[in-house]
Length: 386
Image 1 (cartoon, rainbow, N blue to C red):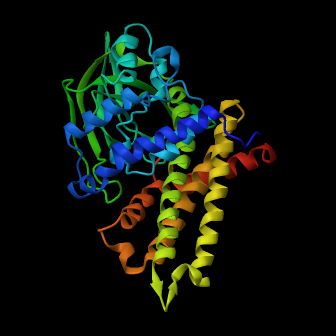
Image 2 (image 1 turned 135 degrees about the horizontal axis):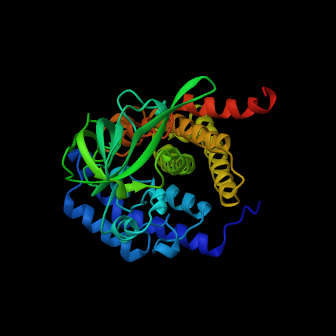
Image 3 (image 1 turned 180 degrees about the vertical axis):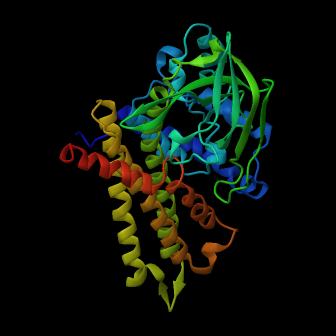
């Protein structure tokens, strides 16, 4: 593996870093306090991202996206994550499973989300089915040329802004190794479809302004032409997105940890106690050394995993390792940053307590740390337990 970034990648990193500092960071505090991003600000960020060529950077060039490889995507995610999700989400990364669109779906869904004309959301999680996605209860029953959907989703990110949802519902059941399994189908369901209700979910202390929603389906009728991919093969389109998403979450965690580290370093040099900068004392300097070492390890693991993804050699376990390690490093670094700042680390006059709050969600969404350990250990033991 070549550890040297290309000139194009270095330029990309600098461009995204400048975008974050100019277009996103100035609004972070006001968005956090208001727990909302105004429609005007959302439109402004989207427009700036489109003009800068950052919008839909994860989508292939042939559909109008940025066409970045996974390593470059990870670098962009690392820089964008240095500001709250509430803001950098508007530098949109459409669900890549929309590449499964066919026929008229391409014109109605795929191309509009890449061009910033429509916004999608990914609706899988349910009240009784979080880590155990196979336990979803939302069902879609065939009725002539339509499917009728009944059920509920929750913790659906960004659904309040979305023009349509990619909804996963059970369409059949079968047995495998003596266990009942669900065959799932993905549907494209437009906002405002009769029988579909979207409402704000519980308030989260992480990433204020970035809201999750509940979606309810009550005899919601959707044409069969709205099936994304193939009937009963929804997991095939979902799993590719979820696995790659874990690597990008790892990159997000690295970026947040780097921001916390920068703040801790500056405070350690500026804050004086007992006549000297606190960073000159071993109790603080050793924390900084450990934080820097952990962040470097998380970054290298994440970028190496993205590099393997580009070559088609990454395994689910490797994606899980990156997400697990980077998210837990972020938690440690954020906590140590608070400790270094002391009481000021918990005051809402600065960004440290925001970083600390925002860091906590990373060990939960896109697969908890416990689920990542399950994936990793299962992959390690599989060859030995056949």
